[in-house]
Amino acid sequence: MCTRKNIIKISAGIVSILLLLSSCQSAKEEVSSDNYNQSVKIEVGEGEQSEEAMDDEVSEVDETTAGQQNTKTDSKTFGTKTQKSWAKDFFTFGNKNDYIPMEETSKIITKDFKGLAEQEVTFLLGVDTNLAGFGCSIIGVYFITQFDDVARAKIASAAEQYFDDFENKRLVTKKNVSKNAYGSIDYKLNWGSLRSSTPNNGTGTGYLGYEFVKNQPYFIFWSYAIPNNYYEIVGDSTTRESSPVKFYFTRNQLKKLVEILSEENLENYYFN
Image (cartoon, rainbow, N blue to C red; front, side, top):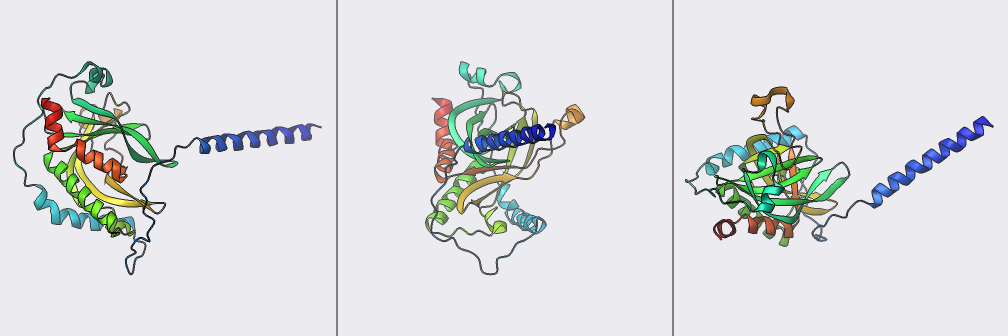
């Protein structure tokens, strides 16, 4: 009798677990993607490469483009525009005086343990800097990317190339080609457990390219781990570096990113 009861209990437990997993899967939000049904180009001789080999190719791109990226002129800053009350409420604590939120109705795509997922993104101006970018959560950590005018121009140029490659079916699935197809940029990254407090910060190199997920391409901006300047202040109460980050964009999301971070839009927002 006891054995029979134990079997019934175990069976009920298994059914409960299966129902829980089923509910989690059914609740997963569908991620938007671009239609790219035509067969994608596969390069002749394509084969799997190690991450080290891919990293070497990325390093070569860095060396060839480094000279072009360091030619920047002095730029105006966005000053200390008075933040709206809702913006102050949105960025309480340490971030209140660092950023001016411009918009929080957009979405981009990140990857979590279950795959791609759409996330809300807030576009930001840096106070007293020439930096603008966006804030977004990835697996419980809030990251804020910041780009100067040179980097923003390169993002716009990369987007234009991506749109053209997409329309003309020139995108390839070879990862060590596609992941940094449009070069690299210097940028600043802040992060923390709350979007209202991101004291961890560092500067590093970000890469512009694209990636196929389930046979559909997405424009990507990504970087390796970045050394944390805040570690020098607080020590082991934080991490020595950031985690690697990667953001995915559909064409519509990429178009909006370029439009919002354009010099014309930033000036109109700030001065109007």
